[in-house]
Length: 148
Image (cartoon, rainbow, N blue to C red; front, side):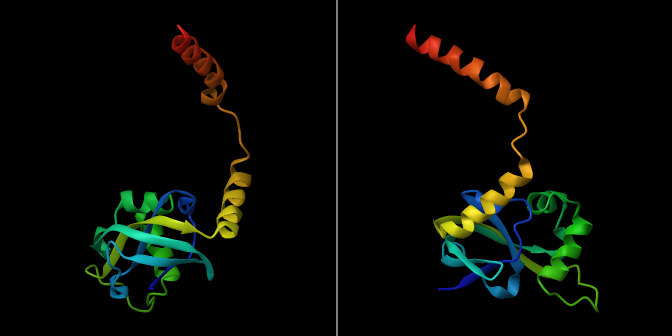
């Protein structure tokens, strides 16, 4: 079974049911194949690559950048160069192909998943918002309508 290495969980997307991956196109990832997912050199579980396509370096835009790390595309490209260990001595050619796709979890290795969840939860600190404050009132209204 092939392996997809996830070097960083920039925006907590590994906690979701499906998460984005971006790798050099030379790794030959195949849609609808199952892969072992390795996060920071630790086994994280199994996933299925559900969709993907080859994107030229010049076409990595703000949408892709914000999806991965919530930052602009020049910053994201700098991060990719260092994380994917691409050559930094020569500028990357605009036509350089990268594979962009989404992996759906099949089975998660729970200790690593819980560790990620707790880290993201600690960062959020569960600050109550107006949405949370309004939720009990909304739920009681829905309950009243169902019993009527």
